[in-house]
View 1: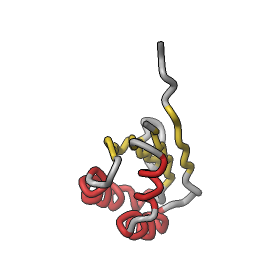
View 2: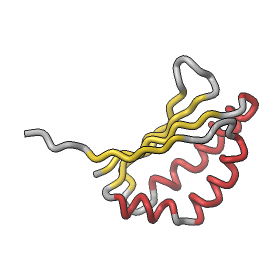
View 3: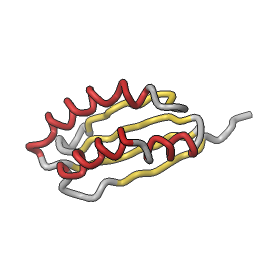
View 4: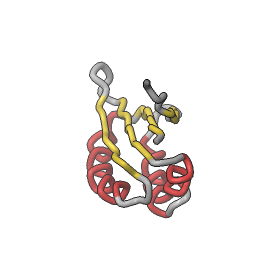
Length: 97
């Protein structure tokens, strides 16, 4: 399992539009092969920073989603709302003993 964290900084006037877009797209992302969950977080200090955290069975599943029309269409709309480059990181969980 992997976790994908994407930190996005928006122009303030687009915050509500992005939250609405996410609420529409979230159920569709959850239907993608290998998606175990996706959530949106609002930064507690900066109103224009949002972070998505998603969990995937594998990096191949994440990459399939990233190649999908759903992602391409969503990202095309979302990237116009940014005032800074988003930061995306992928993590693998360390198995505990």
